[in-house]
Image (cartoon, rainbow over all chains, first blue to last red; front, side, top):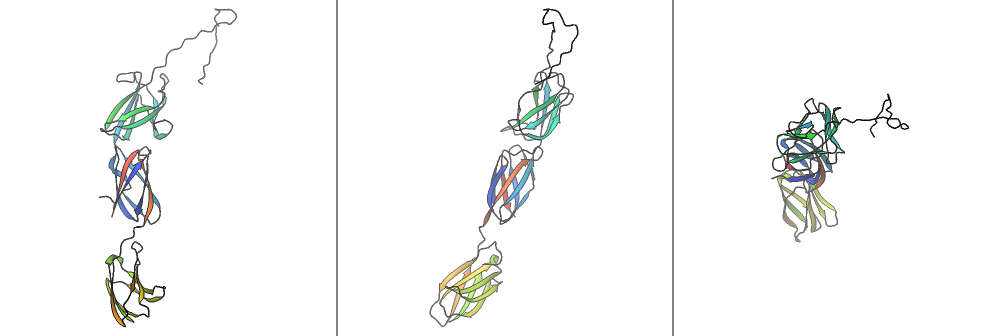
Length: 181
Length: 115
């Protein structure tokens, strides 16, 4: 029986503890308990703190293509990053989307019973496709999982430029510049 | 009166400092105690005495007995000090984060087992 069980919620928890050295274990849905670091903690007579980390071993592959499903034409470059549910806070480094439209995230948590929910934001795509707007949500239930994300192809836009005073008179030569807002 | 004091102390409370005082706080006798069974002698004009034992190790709590001795010129007093571990605690705060992506773990349980 443990001397103390400390509940962790959103990364934090605390307890009144007697001084001494303790071995520490973790129960965390989606994570490998053996990866807890450090594995011991020494409490003194004074208030103290301890920082722990734990690791998972799931692999998630995000495939960005023109259909958002298997078989679609993939994008050929870009990047995507893990975030919080709002997409505002980024976690870790952005992962590159390769020439097959794939971005692989290693060491992600998963759980077959209650899937671990992960969030991502696409940062960039290739010149021929539109970026996925908003937050990508993945329910990670399996150790290895693949999800598809829609990047619609850029549609061709056609323009005419005519004289404003002589209706229908085409402007022989001009350059129009379009700047994104 | 002459007092023959026999004290026994639970081992975990040793070494400890023994004092005998009047109820007014006047020190009658003191001694460092290192054994579980000790016998000492002292003289006191007061019958009302405080027998205190304070472990050197702060992890254990001191203990005192307030006694009124019989009106006898010579007597033997036996006292057992059952020393207990201190219940002092301090607030310990913890964080638990994903090692690879450095985000806070939504829900988990950290279990602490004393060595």
